[in-house]
Amino acid sequence: MATQLIQLTGVSKNYRKGRETVRVLDGISLGIDKGDFVGLMGPSGSGKTTLLNLLGGLDKPTEGLVEVDGRVISALSPGALAKWRSSNIGFIFQFYNLLPVLTAARNVALPLLLTSLPASRRKQHVNTALQLVGLTERASHYPRELSGGQEQRVAIARAIVSDPPILLCDEPTGDLDRSTADEIMDLLQRLNRDYGKTIVMVTHDPRAASFAHRVLHLDKGELGAPPEETPGAPGGTSP
Amino acid sequence: MNRFTLIWRNLWRKPIRTVFTMLAVLVVFFLFTVLEGLRIALSLSDVGIEAQERLLTSHKVSLIMMLPAAYQSRIARLPGVAAVSHGTWFGGRYQDNPEFAQYPVVAEEYLALNPEIKLSSAQRQAWLANRGGAIVGRPVASQYGWEVGDRVPLRSSIWTRNNGSNVWEFDIEGIFDDTDAGMNAGVVLFHYDYFDEARAFGKGTVGWYVSKGDGSMPIENLMASIDAEFENSPAETKTNTEAAFAQEYAQQFGNIGLIVTLILSAVVFMILLVTGHTMAQSVRERIHEMGVLKTLGFTSGSIFRLTVLEGLLLILPVGILAMALGRAALAFVSGAMGAMFPAGLHVGTQSVVLGLALMLAVSLGSVLPPVIRALKLDIVALLRTA
Ligand SMILES: Nc1ncnc2c1ncn2[C@@H]1O[C@H](COP(=O)(O)OP(=O)(O)O)[C@@H](O)[C@H]1O
Ligand SMILES: [Mg+2]
Image 1 (cartoon, each protein chain N blue to C red):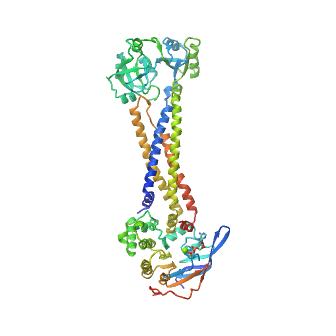
Image 2 (cartoon, protein in one colour; image 1 turned 30 degrees about the vertical axis):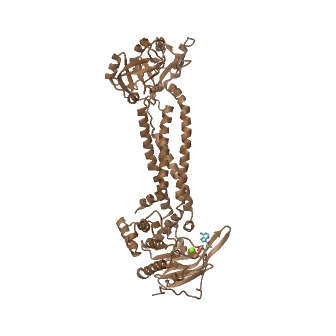
Image 3 (cartoon, each protein chain N blue to C red; image 1 turned 180 degrees about the horizontal axis):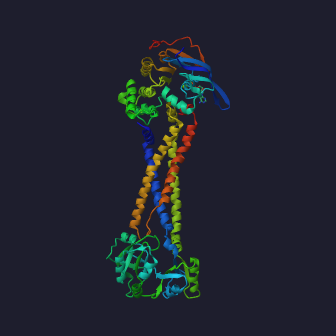
């Protein structure tokens, strides 16, 4: 376990709901290797998104430590965390979260505004990312002119454009039909296998989960044993 | 793609809304500028320094009642008086235009007392040499297209000539500039002798006296001593500074000015409110996107700057253009109606600064509250907004 990239130790998360405190995550400890592809399943409201947010430094645990690459990110200031996120994490959401006022290429270029790369290099990176997701010819389209699958590809291109080692996906196929979902999963698999991205993916879809090397189950704020029936879908498990 | 692209694209998020907002800003600041110009013109707030030192002596009962010409030498004899001359309201109009100011005066005396009247010496000589000659303030000359050498008829509402006509003709011998924006800026001046001989009645009277102190006594004392000189005479006098007269004269427009100001302020306020509301709305629409930007690593500070700059971009360029157009409109109107606004219509630095301050207030006032509220939320809360 020398190459453990992500390490959670005794992580709990409480939310305040009115005058009540709700414990969404309860003492979670978890290690994720570099290059791993982890699926995260669980019923709605079980805290999957919350866990992903903690891994990505969008939120801070109430208790416990979140370490990434030996750095306790749960202790960073908001500014330092923002900077850390921009170079370490690519987020992929269920509803893509593209900016409607920007073309595909400009959406992809967005994270590069935070770098000191010259314009020509930024353009190069954007082209590479769009090529990788197979959307070069849609570069100047606006999100409203794209299909859901295409939007998600743009979102993936945006997530990888600054070449972060970690991709966090929150139900990336949740809004897509089956064949489009398969295409997206192929893409994520390629990013994991060929480009060494470490991926943590929340999903409800057993088919999508079958692309992961391993699947964790979250229930009532705790990581538990997977239910008995295992999904049998294409994509295979580990290489 | 750079940060400006992001600001620019956000600005045009809903193009029709942006266009309408910009149009509203254009209208508001155009109106604001024109209104400011009118307000300043009607308040005569920039009456020059000469007018504050000159004294005007009129009939105690009314400015339109005449004083004996003999008063001139009595005023001149009073201690503390350096010079005295006189003027009379002629009440003429050119063709169908509104009545404006013309005074019959004693040329050399009057010019000496009113050094702000700038006339070339050639034109001055020509005027002195021509009994029927007149000189004209530049605003009036430009409005009516008069040039030196023209012979122009003025129809007086007061003065009839010996021959029964009330149309008087004058040769334009000079066009002068007035640096003081006082009561001479847009006036026609002609010779009193010629006027007095030719008028059918009122011979030997003048409308008012203009005088200047020699500095040996306070101006208030001088005013009092002039009026004391004519106390208990058939024509008692009232003396004040020319500036105070101008102010009093402006009062009659003052109320109109005030009403116009109130109405337009209300309109401006309403449109600003609507504009501000629209801008605030446009910021609220993208709270979720702010969460996305933060997820990507944008800091609250940079999102704040992007949004504020966008708000400024929506208001300032169009607002500044509107004020420039307003100034052009004022210049046009004062060119076309020089007799009505002899001192011209302008807005000064103060109004420009006030306009810019208004623009900043609308822009920041509508953008800051929603942005600050949004950026107080943490990322998770921003992302959870629809
Ligand atoms: N910012 C928040 N404030 C209050 N409650 C929250 C917040 N985020 C999540 N929750 C609550 O925590 C629980 C888990 O949410 P979430 O992690 O989104 O679940 P999942 O993604 O597994 O559906 C839910 O009950 C949700 O209402
Ligand atoms: Mg969720």
